[in-house]
Image 1 (tube, rainbow, N blue to C red):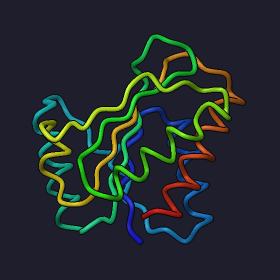
Image 2: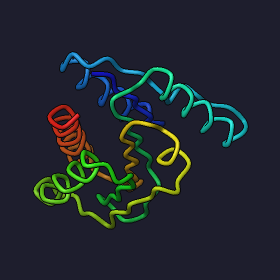
Image 3: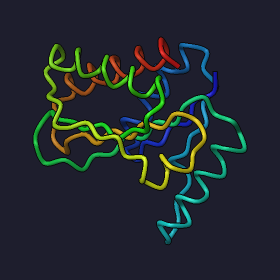
Length: 146
C-alpha cells in the first residue's frame, strides 16, 4: 500500500508517520511541498499523487477553534464514505467531537487526485493525550480500510 500524507504540524506528522511505518506502508510525505503560491503547491501535490498512484491521500490541518473537535472533507468513493462512517461512530469514544462531515467533490485536491482523498481539519487546541488517541484511531482505520 502507498499512502500520501500531508500534515503540516511536524509533531503530528512524525507521530502519524511512525505509526504508519510500523504497518509496512510505503509513505509519500506531501508536507514537504511548500512554496509561495498556494495554487502551485496544490497542483504539485495532485501531480505527485497521480504519478505515484497512491492508494489514499490524507491531510490533517489545525484550523478549528473548538477544542478537541474535527471535521472531515472527502469525496464520494465507497472507501471514503466507509472511513467517515467508522470515524463518526468511534470519535466520541476518544473524547473528540465531530463538528461536520462534508462531501467536498469541488475542492481542488479531492476533485483532481485520482485516489480516495480525505482532509481532516482538527482544532488548534487539544490535549496531547487526546491527540495521541486520535492519531491511533486514524492510523488503525486507514490501515484496515485502505
